[in-house]
Amino acid sequence: MMRRAGTMATSFRVIAVFLVLAVAACAPRLAPPGPGPAEPRLDVTAEEFQTRDGTRLPLRAWLPTDGTTPKALILALHGFNDYSHAFAAPGLYLAMRDIATFAYDQRGFGMAPHRGLWAGSDVLTADLTDAARALRARYPGVPLYLLGDSMGGAVIAAAVTGPEAPPVNGIILAAPAVWARSAMPLPHRVALWVSAHTVPWMDLSGSGLGIQASDNIEMLRALGRDPLVIKETRVDAVHGLVDLMDQALASAPNLRVPALLLYGEKDQVIPAEPILRFWRGLPAATRPDQRRALYANGWHMLLRDLQARVVLDDIAHWITDPRAPLPSGAEAYALAHLDAAAE
Image (cartoon, rainbow, N blue to C red; front, top):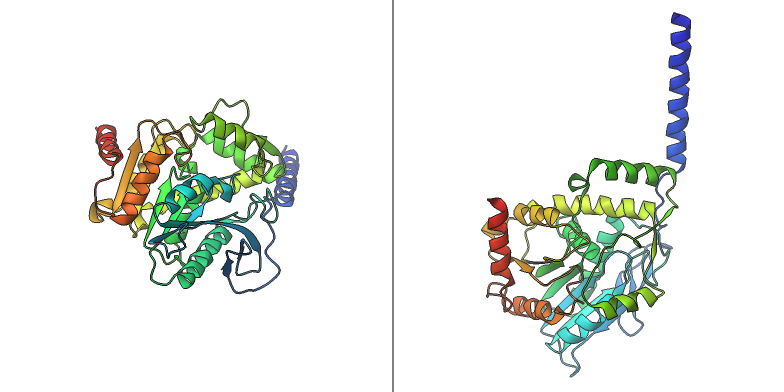
């Protein structure tokens, strides 16, 4: 009996070793680095952002039409599976307010190299820091703000609280992706880990989930026809996104810059609970320039919803005076919602 027990124990150990090897062999894949060290630079004419490792990322810019120096700069980061074209309409609208917007395709998205592969949170935040520094050098003395949409907001939150914080005057996070593991049901977390470590190449699609991202149906249909918008996602890219969201949610207590935090009450993509946790974790009580805005008719794509101009007016107003009341009244609505949730 003892010999049989010993044999079974040995068999279980062998099986465990093979499982570990199998998992290691199918580890989540990261996009490879660029060709080599390079000087980060933004070339608006060539529509290109060169990173520190020599990767060249597509760049778009929306500048004031009169050719004057803008009163403020926005460096904008798009959401997951999207690309820099997401800021076309917001960029044009803000340009009419003398605010210049710059946006690049983040690695693995749009026309950037290694489409569909996750680059890693550290790489994405380093790219943001390099782009911010390059903009500072190009426009010395002009205030610089970071605007992040969904995943872009998570990258910004991680970057400004990291060891290489970009030099900015403030940040604007629109429905930031902070749906971290701690806010997910355990079965979801387990399924994601197992899938990412066994079949990392497997494609996932959001079709059939019944999730509506915006009330701007025409815009959503255009995204569906756009070949640069990723429709099917590798499971290891989703795993990487969740790693980033973990980091973003944990960053809240260390967020020490002026901030405008935007969320739509009809958002079906990022649940309200982690957003409220993020808001509560901020040092906003000691920073009157950290503001929260909740839009009763806002969806996930706040900058492209049918009421996008309401949100963009709030952004432009906050950039002009970070402590003045927002024109929409969305801040008072957010505070009332927070008070009600705390009861």
